[in-house]
Amino acid sequence: MFKKAVALISTIVMVVALGGCSSTKLQEVDGVTELKFKDTIKTSELKKIDSKKVSMIGFMSTSTPLNGEYTYLMNMPYQNCAFCVPNTDSLVNTIAVYAPEGKSFEFTDVPVKVTGTLEFGNTTDSMGYTYEYRIKDAKLEPADISNLEEDIKIYTALINQGFAESMESIFTTLYKTINYEKQEIKEEDLQVVDTDLTKDVKSMFESLDKSKYEEMISMIDDIDNLTKDINKDIESKNYKNLAKYNDKGNELYTTYSMWLLKPEI
Image 1 (cartoon, rainbow, N blue to C red):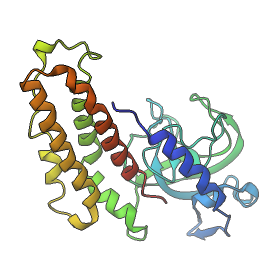
Image 2: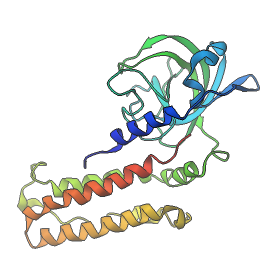
Image 3: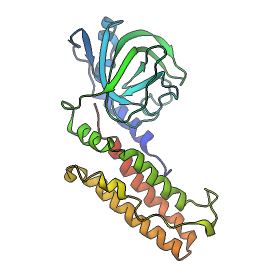
Image 4: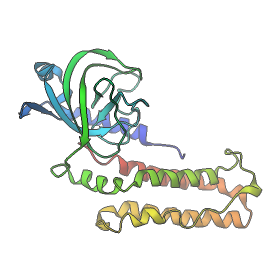
């Protein structure tokens, strides 16, 4: 894949976000305390509801363990190690969420609502992260995003159609072609890139308000132009020219990554 700016960008965003957050009085509805990420920064109020039922809306971390026995709920999507304090094993703007014994979570990249029991107690998990509280015996379900920020609604409407998976496949195809030598592909085996590479992604915008996705639509047009340039060099057998497209690939991938980071709960 092209150089991923997501982790570094996310770390900066998370550290900055911490400075602007403050705890508010916790709200309880039908016996369940509704938590927000800003409520988890200072633990004095949280400790008052230790062992109580809580709910929280956020995004699942891509670092969720393979067996799905627990996950990290984050205030922004598509962060890897960005939710931890740099150079430490502590979490920030993230809460660990554990499934009931014998159950597991399946990853999704849309907003989710978690409901479970808040439990204090120092824990170091199998991923190596340490925290003093978690949500255990949790149920995970799609979140009602009707009252959430517009950026989250815009993000979810596109992501629900498989946008992220399709974009990763597109960038992987371009990367492998541009860096064919690193992929141990012989020049005589190089194939032109499918000119319909972005066709399925383009169709995802048809049912949406395109004015809200201008940045992504423009990026996809740029991918089409990059594909044409790549194919010209392959067809003319100017294989050594392909490496020069890495910078453009990096630029496009960063644009895509930054868009993924826009929603914040």
